[in-house]
Image (tube, rainbow over all chains, first blue to last red; front, side, top):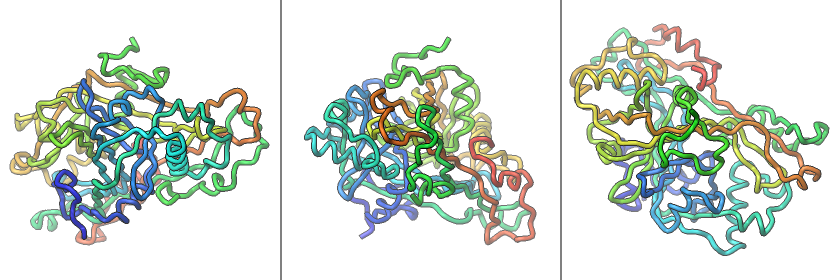
Length: 219
Length: 219
């Protein structure tokens, strides 16, 4: 059933572009790298970019234990917004210009994960969401784990919104002398660069090398 | 003076990466295509992706007159967050993984622009921020203008945060057997595609054609 899971999750503008299917939402979440997370603070709304991860149940966010945004969000409603920009939509008139995109908005109660094992599992999910590497490096220590604040928010109140294709112009404009179309854009990985403090002869993990030239949303 | 313009604008985490210079902020705003805008609603925080534009004084946002987020934001504090992702920073341990990015956060009172001429000027700024095209198509009509809600927020409370370069690992990890480095990424325009309802022989504006293969943040 493709209906909003709650009134506040209902897409209001461009409702024909809304999608509440879990598969659609998950596909966009898997493709994104950054969530813009909004909380209410005593100084007004605050939105910051953050890494994230997810499984079938929840979206996970992490930061330093003293992280202001996560501290403000813990135990409160927060909102996470993930957007993949696919193209500029150039109509006959700027009034109908648009963008092609895939986006997900999640609203819900953020809770702190306190159990160390659950926290470690959430950190693994966030880490491997970017590119799988949790098992490649020096394992995260119990001290690292303690220094980290991890929040989860349920995926029960999530919605996707997708725009694809051509501009939608007014009939009387279509006959006019103006060009209309789409300027697509895409984000790709470049070749990995070894850190200055790392022996240049050290082999780059093969699955990082393989990323070169691929789209970040297809990793 | 590179100090935060207000306490709530002060970058708290990674303060060494903060920059409050107007030039730095403006350069990132000019390079971005999408702002994630947060407002407080009666249902909790809401963050949505939006096109935007700016001049030396203000950030401009627009939407349909009935736009829920802009309606909730008008006359209230809002937050706009613009992020350009430049690379994945792979440390010796996932605990020190990071990302390279350029970001701006603007907090401030959003006000509705009611004067039709000022609104039209703001719409031109938003339109041409994406790629210059305001003067290319059918002009925006007074009716179009009336249907549109435009908000401005001052740029007085803005901060930039920039991370570049290698991972910062712990000394005892640097000697370990693990690779460390950066996987850069970049977003580029592809060749413009003419809309299905537009004569395929109609010439694509030369400055759109010239975008092909260029970085979106260098447009």
